Length: 67
Image 1 (cartoon, rainbow, N blue to C red):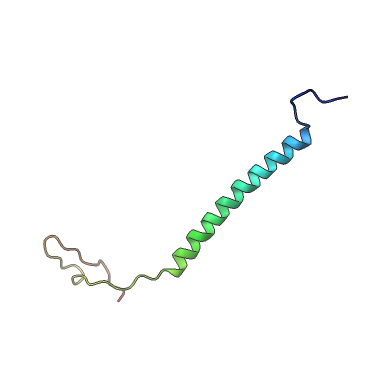
Image 2: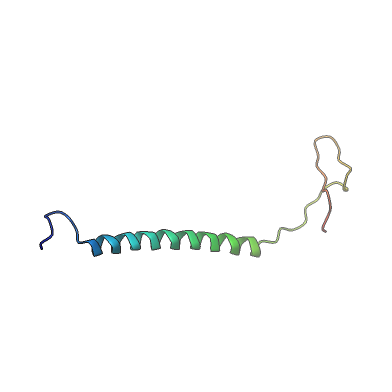
């Protein structure tokens, strides 16, 4: 049997589909790995704030200070 003009063999379509799926999965995994890396590496410094539970109007206070 011969393939119709303009249609790719089934294995080629399967290979292209698999390549697309693997590429999308790779991008997804790389993006999540980057987010996890940034989340674990960033340690924000303590910032000046009011005492816990005591806030002046227009100012915030920490619920529980970790500094």
